[in-house]
Amino acid sequence: MRYVSFIHRDDAGYGVSFPDFPGCVSVGDSLDDAVRRGCEALAFHVEGLCDDGDPIPPPRSIDAIKADPDLSDWREGADLVLIPLLLDRGSSRRVNISLDRGLLDAIDDEAKQRRMTRSAFLASAARREIEGT
Image 1 (cartoon, rainbow, N blue to C red):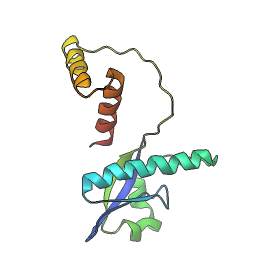
Image 2 (image 1 turned 45 degrees about the horizontal axis):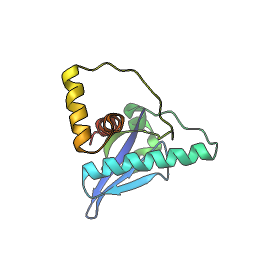
Image 3 (image 1 turned 60 degrees about the horizontal axis):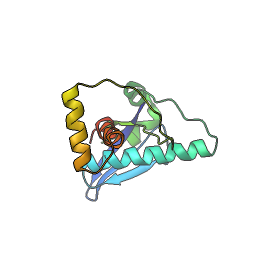
Image 4 (image 1 turned 90 degrees about the horizontal axis):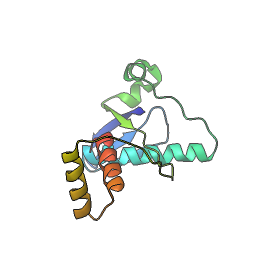
C-alpha cells in the first residue's frame, strides 16, 4: 500500500507530509533521504493509530488528492511522491519461495560476507526495493 506525500523543498532541505495523515511529517537533507524518512514517519504514525485503536484511512489516488480543493494551498509547490507503508509486525513467518540456484548462491555469499542470515538479507533487500532507496 502506498500513500501520497507532499514533498516541499526549502533552504533547510526537504519536508514531507501526508494529506491522508495530517500531522505526520518528516524532513530529509536530500530527496532520497526525505523519502526514506517519510517511509519511517508513516509507519510510526500508523503504528500509533493502531495502538490507539483508530482506523487507518485507505490511500487516496493522486487524482483524488489533486482534485481535493481543501489541499490546494498545501499542495502548492509540492512534488507528489508515493510512499510505501511498511509495518513491522514483530514476528516472522516462514515462507517457501523458488529462486534460480545461481541467484541463491549469490544471495548466500553476500549474506555471509555481511554476517547476515539469508532471511535477513532478503528482507533487507526487499525493504530497500519497496522503499525505492
